[in-house]
Length: 213
Image 1: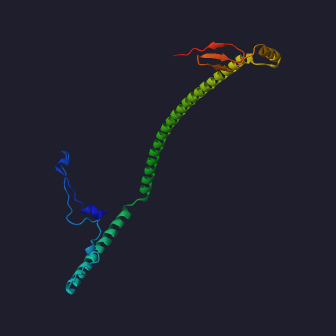
Image 2 (image 1 turned 90 degrees about the vertical axis):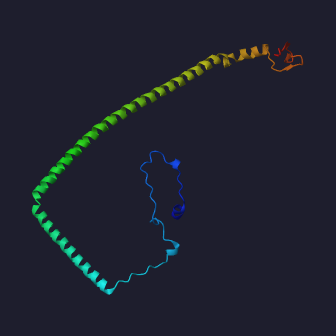
C-alpha cells in the first residue's frame, strides 16, 4: 500500500494554490522514505564488512580506552563533589518545615476549591430541584385535565343512558308495550317499482319516492 502511494505521481496545478500559500515550501525526498520496506533487489544482499588494518584498529582501541577512562573519572569526580555539597547543604529541619508549609498551602487551596465546588453543586441541585418541581406540577395539571375530561365524558354517557332508559321496557311496562305493539303493527318490508313508488309492507299503503336528478 505504501509502495503504491510512493510510486503515484502527484500533479498540482497553479490554480490549486490560493493567495494564502505564500509561505508554502515543497519538500522532495532525496532518498527512499524510511517507512518503505527494503527493495526486492537488495533484500538478501549482505554488505561486505569493512577491513581495518591492525595498526589502525589498535590505535583506535587505545584512544577509545583513554577517552572512556577520562570520561568515567570526570563523572565519578563530579558525582562525589556535588553529592557531598548537597549533603552538607541539606537541612532536615528546613526541609520538613518547607514540606509542611507547602502541604498547608496546598491544603488551603484544596479547601478553597472544595468550597467553590460545594457552592456550585448546591446551586445546581437547587436549580434541578426547582425544575423537577415545575415539571411535576405540569404533569399533575395535565393528569388532572385528562381525569376531568374522562369524568365529563362519563357524565355525558350516563346522562345519555338515563335519557334513553325512559323508553326501556321494564317488567312493569311489559303488558302495555305488548298491547301497543299489537294495536300498531309495523312491517319493515317494502319494495320499489320502476316509477319510484315505495310499496311498504303487505297490508300498508304506498307513497311516491322522490328521485333526485
